[in-house]
Amino acid sequence: MHIRKLETFSNEFVCFVRVTTDAGDTGWGQASTYNADITATIFHRQIAPWALDADALDIDGLVRRIEEKEHKYPGSYRCRALAGLDTALWDLRGRIEDKPVVQLLGGKPAALRAYA
Image 1 (cartoon, rainbow, N blue to C red):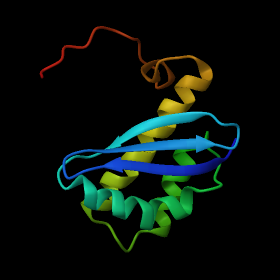
Image 2 (image 1 turned 180 degrees about the vertical axis):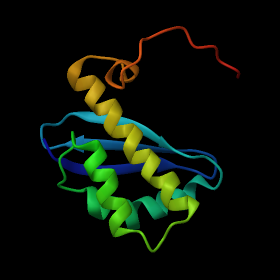
Image 3 (image 1 turned 30 degrees about the vertical axis):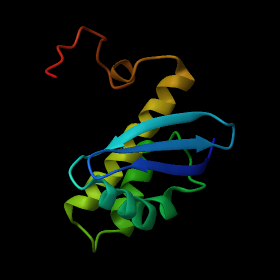
Image 4 (image 1 turned 90 degrees about the vertical axis):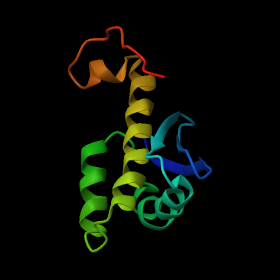
């Protein structure tokens, strides 16, 4: 299963990432807030080129690869953009396996207190 399409939906305050695979499966993630529109630009310039056509289920390998390829740009915007891809891929895997992401990571689903 390979990544075929990467999209961002952003404004100044929020940036969502949608990953679509060659099988048509999708996953959603969120890049960090604060100047999220800038993060979306970084996503498309420095994250997406390395992620397109990559194995969508090799999350750790893909994150390592992007960090190696973009090591000369260690700033927070790159990390924020990569977080959008990472969370979208975990969401994708959870949907495919029909499991909550917390379970995929070795935890147990439980109530979560919201603060806002």
